[in-house]
Image (cartoon, rainbow, N blue to C red; front, top):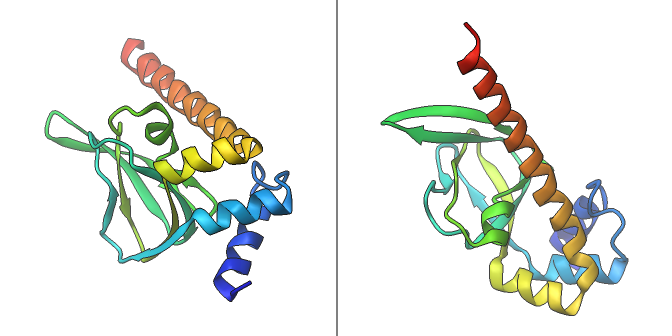
Length: 154
């Protein structure tokens, strides 16, 4: 096992939703990941694009932003350990926001075809992604409710 493969395996084993995977399933996931580095300011996800994959944020921070009516609204910041872009990868819909590296970042990219192959061959790998999708939907719902409350308050 190479240093980067072993490091990715340890990283995944330390994530709450992925720590229950068997060593074999985690190794299959590691082998499907592509390491990428990007400088600060690089946009890894473009709002409106089709989701071609998801990113595990290994190091650095990513700003999540939404463009509406020509204005950019910052929705939040993602820290190492975050799974970025999973919703669009799973639901095949356009990305709802952009993600921009605030600092130099390192990510592990999982393409949609690799995810689909893994989910077919190693069904248990799909469960952590399902939990991640559920968590993202819950966060988005809470944010929407908060914006609605702010709008309705006198």
